[in-house]
Amino acid sequence: MNAILHAYEVTKEEDMVEPLDYNRRSRMKNFDKCFKAEITNIIRLTEMEKLFQLRMINEDDKNRFTFLPGQFVMLELPGYGEVPISISCSPSIKSIIELCIRKAGKVTEALHKAKRGAVVGIRGPFGTHFPMEKMKKNNVLLIAGGLGLAPLRAPMTYVIENRADFKDVHIFYGAKDPTQLLFDYQYEQWHRIDDINLQIIVEKPDELWTGPVGLITKLLDDIAIDPDKTYAIVCGPPVMFKFVCNRLKDMGVPMQRMFVSLERRMHCGMGKCCRCNIGSTYTCLDGPVFDYWSVMNLKEAI
Image 1: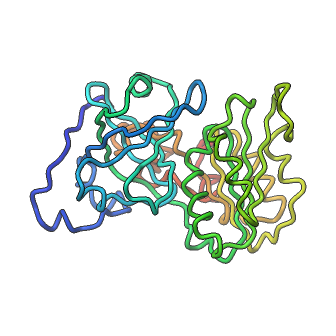
Image 2 (image 1 turned 30 degrees about the horizontal axis):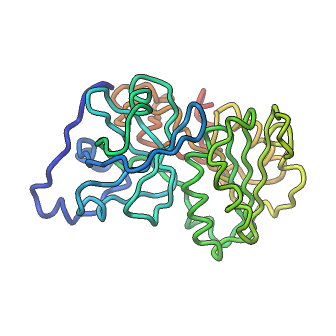
């Protein structure tokens, strides 16, 4: 989708006070509303990924824009187009939105050349979300591979900020090699949080790597869980889902308690281009978050 969307102006009082609707199918009018945002900070994570911190320009928009862990936005760069990006920050922080963006196309390449102060457009938030309320009083497994740590970061921060509401929490993250690890500047902070088991693994270590080596499923070998009191969130390349989720299934975790994000299938974010559809299911309208049982019943979903 290459059409440029212009920032909207709220002209009706009811539109100003009405909260955003999380059910995209219920109100199509939310599609064309675009918030103006300024890039306030850019953090280089790897050679291919950068973290962009954005701030709404309009003060009323800062209070009106809210999201739930797992949702995404359509990010517009004037003159280039727009792309769907998962939100990668805490839902409790109203002033800043963080988006982890991989350089992978015309729009994202242009974004990687942007500087602080550049103005972009944001539509959303869109999509389904991880059922964090349902997970309370249960054990939680947060598992990410590669770029999957970006969408996982929102539920991670939710769990960390509400640590007393959850039982055992395990965070497992894997990458091809140490140079591809995201958010490495935060690992020490996460390690220091009481009662959270953080483990990081790589497939191809370098001479400085001292951590575990192998596939991410290796990290599941040494944990003991009560499968009927455990939820899992899995984010990463689709090929990873089968290995991780099938392993969890073998450990007794019901497929309805495993949740995956199919954000990589997103394109226009509006259900118009049909690139994300799986049969009659549109990932951008009915997802990107699905429980694993639903994914296994969607042919060619992964």
